[in-house]
Image 1: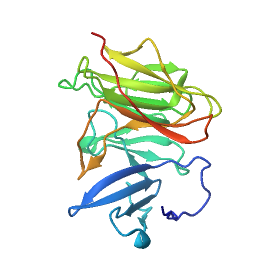
Image 2: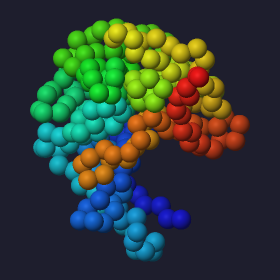
Image 3: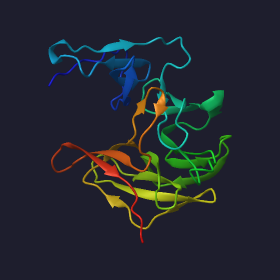
Image 4: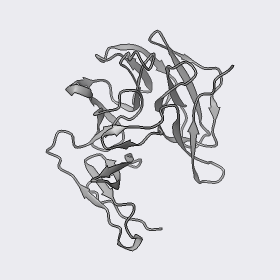
Length: 246
């Protein structure tokens, strides 16, 4: 095992955030870590004793500090701008075909469709004000909800070919958490019956798929939750999907 320091300057958030992806560059795999104002990569197949991390940042570029939005059916060239501390997103969204959206600041978000073959262009975000919001493709607010946690994502259901929302509970990091599944009905959000109980707080909730060569290929019907087990103090990853009732 080997650890590599990530360069940084200025004041840092107590809860820094980022994304970890695997890309292919000229046929060679690269492990990429994206942070606000910083992009780092490493060759995961290189000799352990010679591994080194390469980082770059150019704050004059418009897209510096943009994180990929990788949950839902609309996954190519979509991103959101981090705030300066990297704690949340400013609400500035860079969507496909050059579309720019400006919504209220949020912690996490995902795209939705009522049916996989009939995209509706819905977007859901967990706001920093404690409210989650369902918006259409022109950023018009359709509905808002209180009591949700900061971590949400969207997954495809093989049961009815629709898209669903997974959301953590509104708890702090000293309590056991739970994840609730919600379905979209005519541009409204309806909760399923029972949430899933977890052994600690949900620190991260996102899509299980990994982007490769600028295309997002892979499963859409599961999400990965990273949880800190309150009994053991260790971090655990859970795959969450929806089961069909027959």
